[in-house]
Image (cartoon, rainbow, N blue to C red; front, top):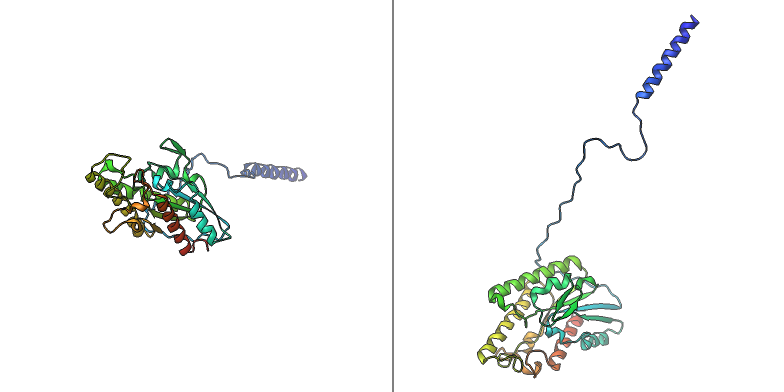
Length: 281
């Protein structure tokens, strides 16, 4: 009887060992991979939203603000630091300092806007860094109207200008949502003296060239108004009753760029806008 009892215990023990060995082993760490691959899920890219209306952000109160100017030679004429504009602001706000970067490139046109924002570029032999490679609080975009897209014709050229402006606004709103965007319309061209001293034109050609530049500047103004973009309009302040640019605001050597009086007016109007809009308050 004792022998059978011992044998039973041995059999039961062996059965228990077999059952233990058949239990699946678990290991700490990640789950055991199966043989069936699980495809990774890539999030669908967010659709690029069209630019419709601009909502200007309220700038935070701070001591130093960086302002970038972007345009052609008409804005480059303000100088690298726009001294009068900066002085007007700093005289009004004693606790505010302006850091100005005038990135305007002579001979550049509105179709270059996207490249100027995103890439290093060469304009008139000078190398410019991508505007968005550095931080700023405010960007002032001029019309580039004195370098119209003449090779496209009037209708297609204006369409291209609007396309470039929409693309630039979409990029800026996406990449710099807390920076203020302001449009600038520069001085008006003279219809009787445009380019005298620089280029040989008949009176009819001078009027035609000035009219084309008017179209681009006026389109810049319309684009700003249609899309709720802050606008500094110097253009209409510098036209005579016949619609031609007042000569006192145009430099007398080549009759294209702003005279010192024209530069002063542009910078004063810029300062007036920022003061009246209480941008730094």
